[in-house]
Image 1 (cartoon, rainbow, N blue to C red):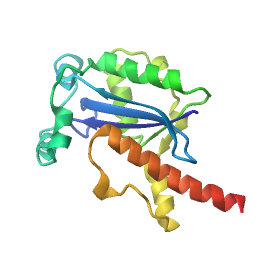
Image 2 (tube, helix red, strand yellow):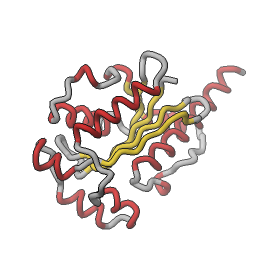
Image 3 (cartoon, rainbow, N blue to C red):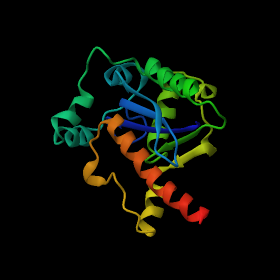
Image 4 (tube, rainbow, N blue to C red):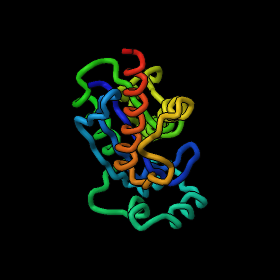
Amino acid sequence: MNNVMVDIETTGTAHHSAIASAAVSVFNPLTGEICAEEYIKFRWKEDCEICGGKIDPATVEWWLKKSAEARAELITCDRQLSPFDALMRLFDFIRKHCDESPVYVWAKSPSFDLSLIKDTAERCAIPAEMIPWKYWNERDVRTIEGIGAQLNIPLPYGKKDVTHHALEDVRGQVSNVATVMSFLNEAVEV
């Protein structure tokens, strides 16, 4: 498999926002089968203190209004990794589990999630060559969901289902992509 779904939770929505957590799943876009997944917590405070990560007060206020489970994404714990180690773990996971080239990386939306991952990598002095995908292989979940809406395809993971836990959101995004792709695949086969 060579399709990867990525989701991150952050301390802001602007350039240089620190990443609090990331999740990644290697999946089949036609079936939704997930063959491997990883959930990584970042030491976002270290990112802010050492690497130039930023915190947006409005985003922190937004987090405080979410469920206890969602707020737990920001709480520091022993399982957190430095931003450098967290990104290397993410990149190594993708390299290990993607057995074909090219690697297609999906996000909702790449201009947010993947852009902040690349930004954090740059701030942590990780060479661009270490990122295991090319920008032209980035895929947007919102585009697929928009096609689904145009074709009246009911999506299993709606806005009310979003938990703001990176791994749960990755699984939901995989489900939505597979639902639409499966429908399109069946339509083409007829």
